[in-house]
Image (cartoon, protein in one colour):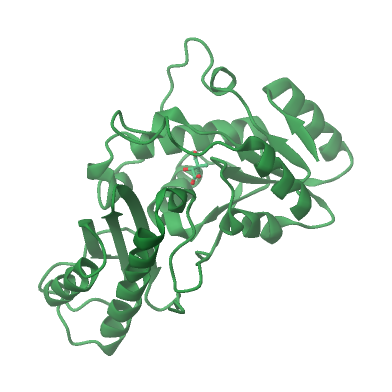
Length: 288
Ligand code: PAF
């Protein structure tokens, strides 16, 4: 596996790969890689594809009181894991290589950023959309792949690719879970063993509520109350516990009976750690 730190090095490797007729697949990450990230690599591995994983902790997507400074950084073990999985190129740029001096362009995706995590993390999705657009510009991939744990992020990336006419196929992969259901996340490293055990309650709540929606006949108002009641047994704080349309992310009206295909999404705190998780009722099954 080649490790490159800047645009020049990356472009040289990519043009050689393209000259050999290889497609380019991009796996964007912020590092601290776990099995969820590595399955994204597995999913795009192909004899005719040059797989590029990027590791960049993007300051623009962290708010002033968020965990940018303590976000886990372990580039050497990340490189070992990627190499063992068959990744071809690790792109690990510095902040100055991504945000050039005088950088002034931002990408903002409208309504999809205004619900769920959007109001709670002002500027977050603008930071994500901007850096992903930059990574697409740097890599010009044929394919890019993202995990569905960050469901809202994925919806926003798909929309920006459509709206900006970018020639990249966006693929996604189901959330990878620990035994017991906890969604894999680099932030799980912040949990102590007691918190980790309680955090499994988020997946159980999603699984139970998913079954309630499939039963039908219950209003969104009633289901929201049940969702929060179940979550409250395990987590310390609920930022939101919502039912939404899986495509537009519009919240289901309180008086409506949700469609069989509904997005259940939550952000909770366990101890000081913020965790997000979701399911689309007709598409995801959680083994708890
Ligand atoms: O999901 C992530 O790890 C990040 O938000 C991403 C897509 C790599 C952009 O920084």
